[in-house]
Amino acid sequence: MTSEAFVRDGAGVDPARPDAAPTADEVLVSVRGGTLRGAREGGLTILRGVRYATAERFAPPVPEKPWSGIRDARKHGGVSPQPPARSAGPAGLSELGLQSEDCLNLTIVTPAADRARRPVLVWLHGGAYRSGSGSWDRYRTDRLAREGGVVVVSVNYRLGALGYLRAPGVSPGNLGLLDQIEALRWVRDNAADLGGDPENVTVVGQSSGAHSVACLLGVAQARPLFRRAVLQSPPLGLGLGRPALAARVAERFLTRLGRDPREASTAEVIAAQQLTERDMSRRTGFGMAPVYGPVAGADPLPDVPGWRAAAREGAGNLEVVLGTTRREIAYYLAGGPLSRRVPLVGRAVEDGVVNAVTQAVFTRPTLRFGRLLGRAGARVFAYCLDDPASVSPYRACHTSDLPLLFGDEAAWANAPMLAGLSWAEVFDRGAPIRSAWLSFASGGAEALTAQGWAAYSGRASEVRRFA
Image 1 (cartoon, rainbow, N blue to C red):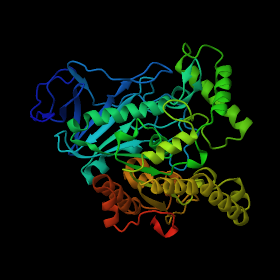
Image 2 (image 1 turned 180 degrees about the vertical axis):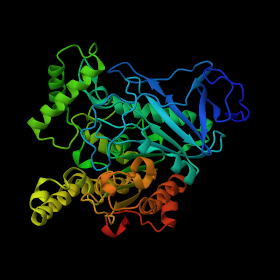
Image 3 (image 1 turned 90 degrees about the horizontal axis):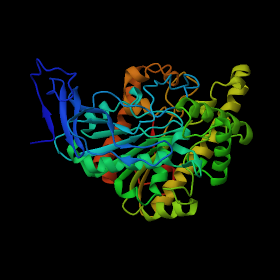
């Protein structure tokens, strides 16, 4: 008896009844807490809105309790409340989805919940710690699960002030990181029931999701929960949040809110968050840096020296892939007023700024972190995504790796950063990236070495180039 049960002749079954037998396109999956009703789509079992924890506002997460009966897992759960997108941007306009403070849920895609002990990928989305959702269509993981025969778990966690406000007596800070750790615990405890191997978990993050992974590498309680890590475009040049700055952010937030943050509505909290972001940008010149994010010295993060020490101590059995795109900051700066008004000179100046800031915020700190881990015993591999033959001014900008990894045409085909590329070209460019990540999740360092990757020790020639 496996943990997955199918019914092929669901005629006459009323799908509105929670405990009804599954229809032909439905599946029942038993996990540690109880039974979930999922969907069978395109040869995959998909569970949506699977709650891994609950949390009161500004409180740490509490593991989800067992339940009786059958819990519906066919629709996405809530996403962390967040401001609307500032604009469509180079990656296109993001969907929003149902926003709710009850947002600690997972999207799970597996070939089958049959206890086959497949590799497990856990996806942490980016979004500057203020936006995003693991359940967005642009992060749809069906292709990864199908091409690699892996289980993929995408995590929703708290963002912005609700996830990262550090205000003593109100919010301890780093709640989003605690959410991520709780999600990883849930994966460890339930991977086998989902057809995965709890001892072969790879955590993959992009942008602030990759920054989160770097944070977790220096958290002792998190390290036993995954075996491998992939860090895509981590903005490590931003470092960890400083307590003094977090205190100024909290003071401004509470002033802008003007009432007890525990009693304010969600909309009031988000409005105060936005006003604080605007205020702090003016006062400190934050620019593109997140106002809310992980703060050193707040649970579960040690102070900066302690985080570095913990990352070194946990590196001995770690395998990691990390890298950046060639023009990360072009996402924010390309095609700006200078290059529009003075095309030749302006574009050259713009390119110089893009390259300099990319190196300072992304490339050099990422490779430096790779060297730190490698010297401590980790097996490290580095990569760079080079410019495609795109007619857009963005080219290999921040997030340009995502359509290559997920390969979902409906979600990405109209992204401005892909202008001039056919979807066939995008798909072909993504094939070696998907192959590398999936091989790494399955076979680790040896699998990448077999594909011709060199272990990274600090030489530029050891950085794998994706064209």
